[in-house]
Amino acid sequence: MRPSSIRILLLALALLSTGCDSLFSVEAETEEVCKLQRNLEFPASIPIPGTVSQTINFPVGDITATIPTGSTEAELRVRLFELTTTDVDLSGIERASVALRLPGQSAPTRLLEYRRAAGQTSTQKLTATGSGVLDLNELIRQDELELTFEASGVLPQRDWQGDLRVCAGLWLKTDVLDLLF
Figure 1 (cartoon, one colour):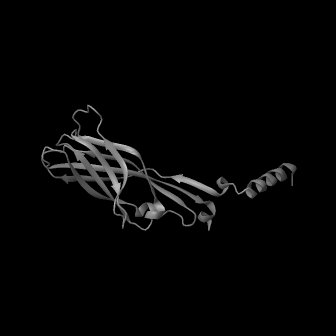
Figure 2 (cartoon, rainbow, N blue to C red):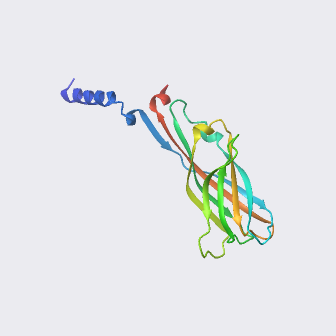
Figure 3 (tube, rainbow, N blue to C red):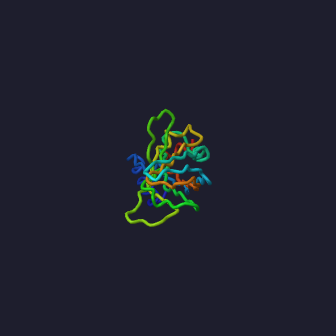
């Protein structure tokens, strides 16, 4: 063996013996997966503040099929929701949110929230971005998640429809040995 090869081997052994986490783990993040629910029906409201909500199912089964078992950390990062309509003005909506209710959970977990900007004029689209993070290891047994969109404020005074788009990405960190064995 050449002296330089021996030095490299000794350096590698020294690093391996320190238990350095970065040598034995790998992190990965997926592109966003988006779910578009078209033509959600919302009821008419009287001209005082009120609340409406709609529930959509977000597919998780396809994402979780590739997560290795073992010492894996996995997060579902909800990044965006948009509500778009073409037939009503949404500027009276003061707040809107997307929340998740897990089986057996009494109150939903709020993931993203929209708040109307002061002095906002007419709009037909509500958008909220951020990073509502969920521990995917807790959700691994679910085929899909139940997400609830809720809007409050002065709502349109006639029945209306909207398209709701929710986007999320997957982040995971796992031990390389769990991938090999």
